[in-house]
Length: 325
Image 1: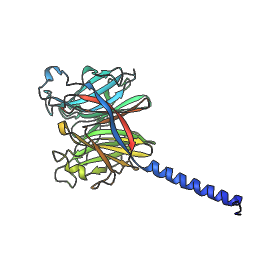
Image 2: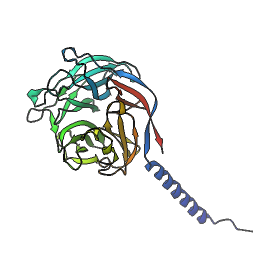
Image 3: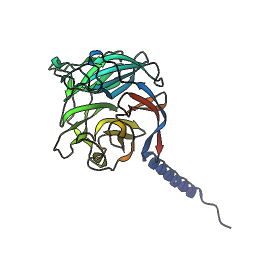
Image 4: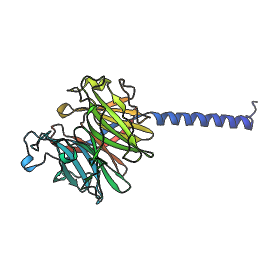
C-alpha cells in the first residue's frame, strides 16, 4: 500500500500550485483586450447653423465629449471650411440631457480664435476636456500651439494666460501641434498630441509631454509613428491624428487615426508603458476600427465610443466593449 504524502510535501505542492495559478492569472491580465463597437450608433450632433459663417462646405470634425457640472452632456466640435476667415475653423457646442439621448440641442458658436492672444485666425482645432479637483480644463490647438482654458461649470471656458499673456502651453517639435488629449496617471498629467513635418523621418507622429502642475512641461517624446498605419492615409501628415489614450487594467490603449470620411480608419495599440506605443514598428498594434476621430467615454460602469459620421456631417455614439483575444 502506498503511504500518504507527508504534511510538508502537501504544503510544497499547494505552494507550487498557488504560484502556478498566480502566474497564469498574471499572464492573462497582461494580455491586451481589443475594443469592439457593440450595437447600433445613435446621432448626437449634426451640421450646425453658423449664421453668417455657414458654408455649404463646412464639416464638424475633431471634438470633445464630457459631462458638465449640472449633469448635462456637452460636445464641442471643430467646424472646418466655415466662412470665419483664416483657416476657417471654430468651435460649436451641443448639449444633451443624457449620454444615450439622440439629437442633442445645438447651442451655437462656443469659441473663435483670438488673434490678440497670439492665436492663428480661424485656427482652432480639436478640443479635449477633463476635470480635475472640481475644475474643468480644456486643451486645444490654435494651428501651431497647444493651448489651455478652464471652466467652473463645464460650459463657459476662459483662456489661461501665461507670463507672456498668451494661452499657450507648448508647441513642436513638428509643425501644426494639435489634437491634444490629457490623461492623468498617478500624479502626472500626460498630454498626447500630434504634429507633422514634410521630409522628416516620420512625417506624422504622436508626441507626449508630462507635467505635475499643468504649467511646467517635459520635453516631447515621440510615442507612436510609422508602422503599417502610415501606409493607410491619404496625405503625408494624416496617419497619426487625433490620439486618444485609455488606461484600463494596467494597460494603456492608444486610438490613432488615419482617415476621415467614407473610408474612415483608426488603429489601436496596447502597451504597458504610456510613453511607448511603437515608433517604426507594430509590436503593440492590436487592431483597427472603421471610425474617425473617436473619443472613449466611461460612464456608470459602461464604455461608449463617440466618432464622426462617415459623411462628416455630424457626430454619433455607440456602446463599446472590450474583448480578450
